[in-house]
Amino acid sequence: MSEQGQPPYAPLKLAFILLPKYSMIAFSSLIEPIRLANRESGAELFEWSCYSLNGEAVEASNHVVTQVDGAVRDLGDASLTLVCSGLDIEQIAPGPELGKRLRYLVAHGRTIGAVCTGAYVLAKYGLLDGFRCTIHWENIPSFREEFPAIDVTSDIYEIDRTRWTCAGGTAALDMMLRFIAEQGGVALARKVAEVSLHQEIRAGKNAQRHDLRYRLGTANDKLIEAVQVMESHIEDPLSCGQLAATVKLSTRQLERLFRRHFDQSPGQYYLRIRLDKGRDLLRRTSRSKLDIAVASGFSSTSHFTKCYRKCFGHTPTDERTNQAELFLPASR
Image (tube, rainbow, N blue to C red; front, side, top):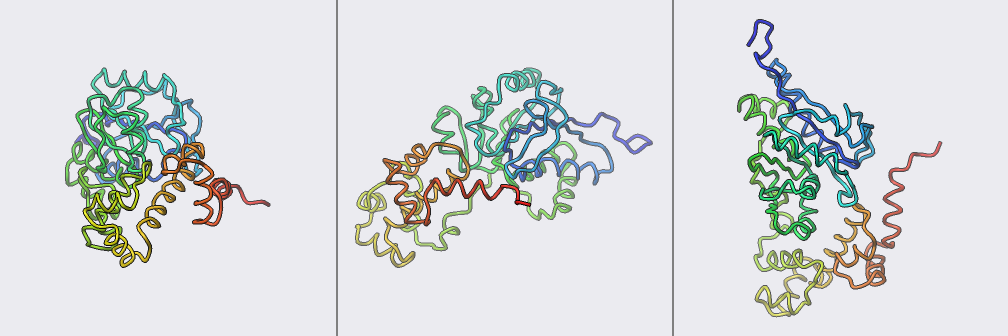
């Protein structure tokens, strides 16, 4: 340390690129740990800047607007640059300038990455070819379908050489604690975690979702296996007979199992899984109702709408209208 209490080297620079509808919880989990690291160390170990595509303020998915330091064309030579995104990532066109700047950083030996759905953007630019990555679990099926050659995992974060990717949410805090530990030491990372009331620093290999036993509240192996098969065949649903054969039970045995644990038939339980998938896509994306119907295992929008209304009491169109109205400003 110098006599002024500052480190005898320049602060490490980080850059955060905020795309429209980015995840606020993920962004906060990125930026707060490095702020706290500076405070707890008593030195300016890190400095950071935020950028949007055009240099203007950008709105998060929760409608909070964030001011930025510049446009992507102003990106400097940061040691770590992370793309932070969120909803409707497939519909956002970041343009060529972001790809150009990220490739420049890679060519000059810098580390780049993404949080939440940002891996989709890196993949579109070809910047994840030959690298392992992760993305939010809701986006993994469509990501694998569009980028079959990329190794995407369901871990909370992945670090593969000069690519850091994170599934989002509070997992971004764990990833940044890893970064702080590498740059400022494990003791500093633990202190930041303690100040953040984050009692356990998770390793990247932690799974994004709770174990199915925990989610279902049962330890019955056959039941768990049946639900796993259902969740892996949403777009192409199996018949009850096919499902029973897959888990090596008779149809009658499978029916009894679901009646005993869930008080409904396998078909009813399966239908609800598919409709929940449809509802999530309606709320989270701007995909057409036909696309969502097909992704949820329905052959037509009319069948999807009929089942949706019976289950939730309103139509898919009403779902989107109601969701939009939640964020309308209150009338004066």
